[in-house]
Length: 152
Image (tube, rainbow, N blue to C red; front, side, top):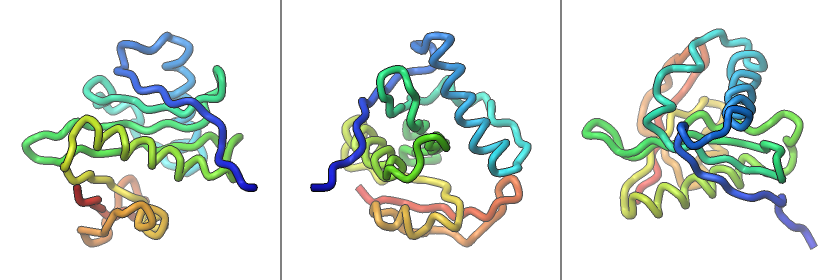
């Protein structure tokens, strides 16, 4: 029998994090998006304060995280900064993280479509979760991306 990864889900505002937990989440994001992807850009972009942060945890060990945006007049709810710890890859945590993020957004904003800005090479992965490409490919920090939408 195949079982999924064991984890707990945590959703918090930025000001609810302990200093240690905040450091771990920001370090994971910098390790993945800046260091691993060789992409120097302002990871601390000023938007974290306005978002919720969903984490998958194994005890105190951070497995994965994502940022959840509320809807605005310009955008539907959004999921971003989707990151899985390099130490925990190969366990389908990316899929688990996205399923948890989608469920959280749907709980808070029922019936709303969900937006993401996806790295182009991940279109098939996000497509398997119900997202459809809605834009031409564009460069964001020198990495090809497309906008995708999951209809509510």
